[in-house]
Image (tube, rainbow, N blue to C red; front, side):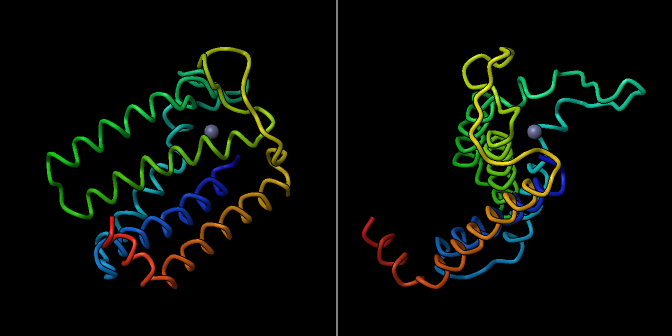
Length: 177
Ligand SMILES: [Zn+2]
């Protein structure tokens, strides 16, 4: 999936996470939180590709870490998210910084999900294996990719609107949790 569609889907996910965070804070939007969430989501949107340290040469794209291996494996990202959530619980960062971290990790994991639906797929068990898991979704680089990304965006934005619209429901659920 191309950079633009990764960014689109990550920002839409950022909207959902902002709404959930605002609901948990009693229904009030804190703008530094929203800004942090969107910035973190934007940074995570392409993180798995950027961390490969790609270089464009006359021979085409080469990267320090082979494409769609270690940085596209879910295990390090899950480990990072567990590590960061432990850190967030003990260090008591500012709300906006927590939002940057949550947005970054969530968008990075979303990147892997989006690549899972491309023909190349992502590694599942062994990061360097030739076998990669993939689900039918879109063809990379053509219109189906943009359509797929926009459908995902619509689902996220619909979910955000639903969660925001059913404000009272959530408050009750959390009050009883
Ligand atoms: Zn990728």
